[in-house]
Amino acid sequence: MVHMELDQYVSDLQRQLANAAENGGDDTRAVADRLAAGLDAATRLVLLDALSAAVGEITRELAPGAVDLRLRGREVEFVVSGASIDDEHEVPVEIDDTSSSRTTLRLPDALKTRVDEAAAAEGLSVNTWLVRAVAAALQPKQRRAAQRAVKTGDNFAGWAR
Image 1 (cartoon, one colour):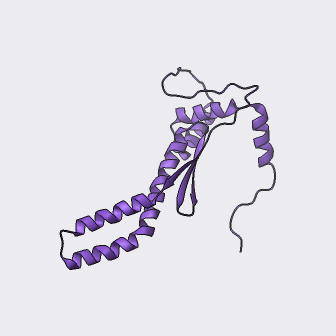
Image 2 (cartoon, one colour):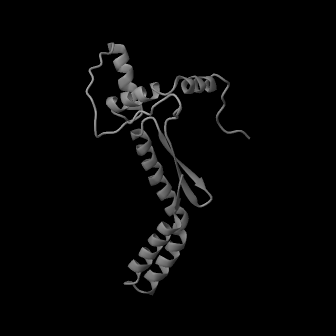
Image 3 (cartoon, rainbow, N blue to C red):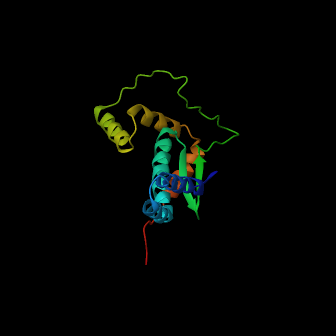
């Protein structure tokens, strides 16, 4: 887990606004002071939006891991999770871009269409989507069975009043 404090970035923006207003008159400096005071919340929201977009991009490239962004008070936490590995029975599959092999895969047209649609829906190339699917399929069978068991219960999501 990695922690990130946004206060420094908010303060930097406020300081840059004040520095830009220094060349103006008293009215300009007064307006800059009022704007700087209101920038705290807006700057945090913009930073969180940018960080969320970055987390989404990074997660798409991790196979089959993920990055989550959590907000605790005024602090941001990044939680990186990878595929679970049974250390006694399974050897981790290293997925990297430095070495790769070409494989010809023949798919029925209907399945190829579904793969194309699934990859597009996740904003991935077909190759990246297939690599992730193969990596997930190579997880230990016990883990996959546990994941399926969790999905079979009644699940509810949403808001209640």
